Amino acid sequence: MEQFVKGLPYPYEEACKEIVRRRNSYESADKLVRHAIHAALQLLRTYHFDQQNGILVNCKKRSECSIHLTWKQYQSKLGVEDTDN
Image (tube, rainbow, N blue to C red; front, side, top):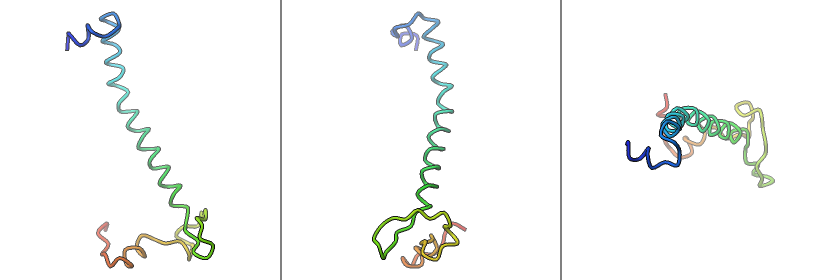
């Protein structure tokens, strides 16, 4: 580790501070990525495929929409039991 720190293009103390800063930023980066993935999936869930027009339609109603395919409907079409409960 000592040799690695000395090999960095910073003075020794600054290199140590930079390593600590990067280690501390892992957690916030992880939270940021998880939040971005969650938000993207939430946005994706607002769409359903309109079979008549052959396009994706933004539909905020989701569970109230009769056209919106639900996970349970999809599983029943596949013949798979719900293992989430």
